[in-house]
Length: 240
Image (cartoon, rainbow, N blue to C red):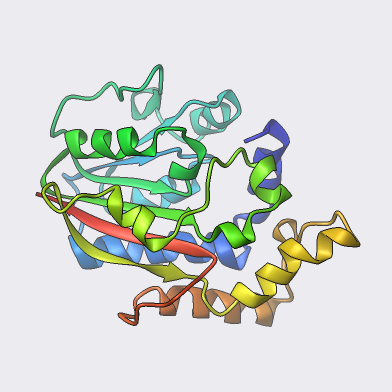
């Protein structure tokens, strides 16, 4: 991301329904897939400002990884130096089978070789360990927002599943999320830019709308209904 995007993120992520909801559904899915224990270790890849990792410290040991200096500057204010990893090259400097959890919240879309990243997850996790990822969905929603955030792609369900082959992973859950707001987001991404450069992602909604959107986002992320589309995708996988 551009440096000013980290400032935007820090400003809104504490209260915006999407960021709060994404952290909540990730925590809840980790507890459902394999309840964390204090001795377990979680690596949050592309940790950004570190807010999700901070919240997970109540459940287990946490490590954070990023390769952007602006992110690392923020992480150094929130974590001890031994918890922070700066990705240099493609290999995470941890031994094989070191972790019980790997999370990557809206990260895979930023890397050219997403399959290599997932292979790295498999190397780092112990058998039975959990990988949880979220990604933006639907190339129909591609916009300047994706360009500013340096996205390489938006995913469909088949693309995301293909990164986690059955010989190596048991898929616990994979589905579209943010389903209800898809039509509104399509309009915001396709029509609104013709009239305004303002971004709704930078603004907090009125409190009751913020609450409602968060509850819909989180609640529907646990439905078993295979949704046909959504703004995001969530995948939870167990390493074989």
